[in-house]
Length: 425
Image 1 (cartoon, rainbow, N blue to C red):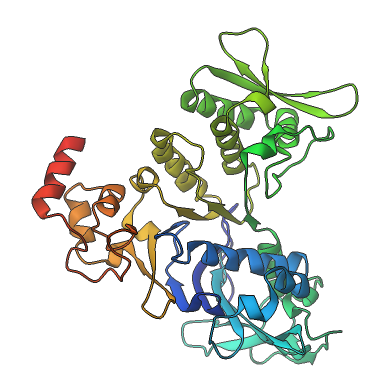
Image 2 (cartoon, rainbow, N blue to C red; image 1 turned 45 degrees about the vertical axis):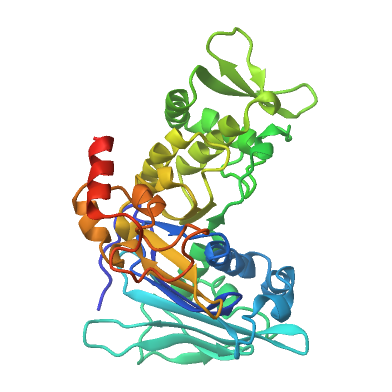
């Protein structure tokens, strides 16, 4: 089967995630992932742990398995309490025009050091073909099939790695003869799992344009300098949205100082002189960082954002959710939230509800699959309202920590939801 011609600018997409033995994630699956996927649940439900799965995998490629493993406290802290076997991460992703590819990574610890006990890539070419592994490694030893469209008839070449803690995809993906492996490597190394902070925009970095925000956003002035020089129309759109969200803000300036540092300033419309970013509000700087990230001219293939509601006025959150969905046309986003205002702009298929079962392990379901939720939405209810009313079965730490299994999940009746919906209209 020949691949279809890829759509211009179409991003690769993760469609499935499975995690085993990763902290409270004894075994979870996220199926049919959407371009915008939002994780919802009470504190301690496992949202940040799912978020960290993506950070861990990205760091394995960027920094190496040993550093990513040690950073999280090694097996003692990283593996599920009482769990047996390795940590397993499996993703299914699709490049435009190619079959669905499964990447499977299993890591365990031997004599205090992490080891890749199993790593493979698999796909099925054609509707009647059998799935086969075109990369298959265990503890640094294995084989791979080269070529643009590797298949079961192609020759498998043994390529030993120097150490058992090296990832085969990261190593072989640097060679042109393995283009599908290289595509996955490029995909994962391009992920942006952010930990944006308001303080990040208050620094005075060295001048010089930079194309992408750092994980903390401490180079937002450099990115604005880049946009001003190369993508003025996109920067103007950012300012336009910022003016709507933060009253009286006119524009943001990145000025090079005599000592070579870059000074970020915010121009307030009523005043002739701009204000230094270090004196701006946390909310203004956080909103600016989000807009810069979501309007990247060449966005990362995957973006992770934790709790975007922090420091932002609640009324800004539905619009930020819409910005995230719009960005989902060019990238894929994973967001964690506690905000009903952010949820109110979301669709049930975009939201995954998380909770801890009686054994303390994280479980998850789509909001669209919870009893009663589709009917409520059909009658005009909003997800944030349903969550606050207890209709999702989780999220209120003082009322319900269990699984969302009750017929309509919560404490209110149909008439209550209809009244709430009528009041909104």
